[in-house]
Image (tube, rainbow over all chains, first blue to last red; front, side, top):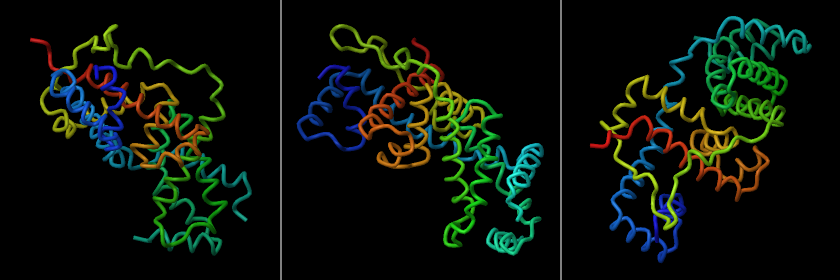
Length: 83
Length: 195
């Protein structure tokens, strides 16, 4: 396995979906290739970072801008939903 | 504080002031969700407006068993996707430039390095979270949407395929490439300097 194949198999490996033979070749490649160790490590960090990046977005935008609130109320009136 | 359930009941009883209370309570969060999918704040506001109209036209579908926030969240994602579909006539941006590069032997052309100072700890800082969100925002649209639906919204491959009109196989390929591309963008920010 070379670095290109390592990257192709990466998602399946992380999801534990690689067949045993390919998983063994994957691990063999990592043991011989320090850059791919870093790649695997930073790929896993990417997955964690993306989840955490949105974790507190709620507090960033707690209140809706007043123009949006007014537009929503107006749109409901125009759509006849009041009835 | 009046619960969402009580406000919904008042709304069903014809008390229109309850609608404004629900809007003020939930629209901020919904705007944040819509903005993940749409590049412009104007589009995100339109999506939230559509979402509220859709939600309160189908108020009978809201059951007290689920929370109003969860219900509105799903409706907002759908409204944002509808908005994207309506304007997806532009040529697709390329993702190739931010995918890993290899030489003729299949070896990494750019040697990956560690990321500095525990990127995850850095994430405690608001500015770092903003960097990650901005990087996700730089992904080509169809890749970003798949990444958001699969990794952030935690929809499964089949549902993501249904929502985007892609095949499940294409969803898997796009998720894989979107994650690789995001890693490249984050490496530009977090990789330690070569010594």
